[in-house]
View 1: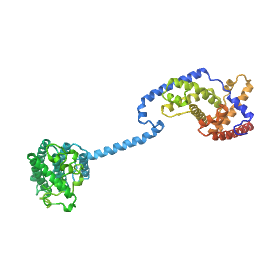
View 2 (view 1 turned 180 degrees about the horizontal axis):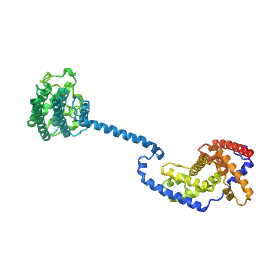
View 3 (view 1 turned 30 degrees about the horizontal axis):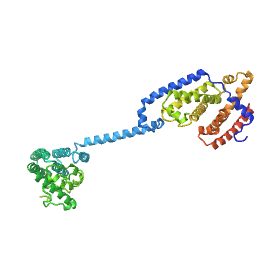
View 4 (view 1 turned 180 degrees about the vertical axis):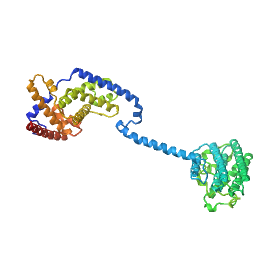
Length: 316
Length: 180
């Protein structure tokens, strides 16, 4: 038997098998009707799940179903991750420096500031965070826990940042914001004095430093309300000092008056995009404000030992 | 003239006219194919219905043939038959053979039925590819080119399969004769 060739016996047998009865017309009609009915039903189904095909055009159902499980797992993981993270951040908001979640609270504050683009909102948030520091001091004192300097440093940073942001606004808005800052700082100051009066023993040294710093901020805000130009000059000087001092080792940070009112190290430069050109030569778009580094306000990099403390020998 | 690709493009949109046309064109061939392999009209109808149903489902899930609709339908039909006989032992259906040729005398009919039954049984004992080659080539009368499309193998492989299939088939039929 050659390739593909049949012997006569096999050929005859195949021919016999080929001989099949004709398909019944009723069966053809019925089969066709069923087929078309099924087509209509599937077309309707397809119309209803058309959006899935739109989103997953290249994935067939055969592939889609096994994919469903990993997709659900990923979605669940994201929910758990973000839900857990959000829960942790929420739980951290009432924590104190000695507690493990405090760092989360600090990070969430930094993150919130980082994500805020409006100068006014940033200013408001800085004031709110400064209020939180005062509440922390109150709670720590009530618990009899020594107040860590970390609180003082962050408070300074946040209030300096508020003043810095105000200096970058136009005159009218700056005056409004400075008044707002002054009132808030007055309230913080009042709170600190009450806490210090209520202390059974001598007040915590950090509380004394905080009160002193708040006093300076009050004076600065009040000065800004009467002399906008002078206030901006002062802020500008502080920033210049900061830029210079930033290039020095923390141990070399000045306590020689270069720090101005003592918090210049924590003034964060304004992003140039947030400067308002009206009302002042300092922020007219060409002035020294535009020379400030364009880092985002309130960065953790300015926290820490670089901040000269009132009364610590590094400040006037 | 509408090519298979154009036809399939319209069929995927479930155009009833096109689908009816497809059914009219291809269902007789599929029916004959199933009938020749099963020898059972009911099974053959079932095979046709199932093959066309699977085609629609393939369209609805954006799968199915991109071209050569006939090849696709033969493939489905053959798979259906193989699956069927995998689950259910092969049995002769003398009634259908009688319907196949009512000019034959009763004694002849029985002999023919048994002979056909043995041949079908022998074919379905081959490997799936060999079965398809034999059925498509010698029962359906398709060319090697078309068979190559259906089985998705080169023509040279089809020839080789054909050769091996015929040899095996002959051997199986000889064995059957010895036993009978």
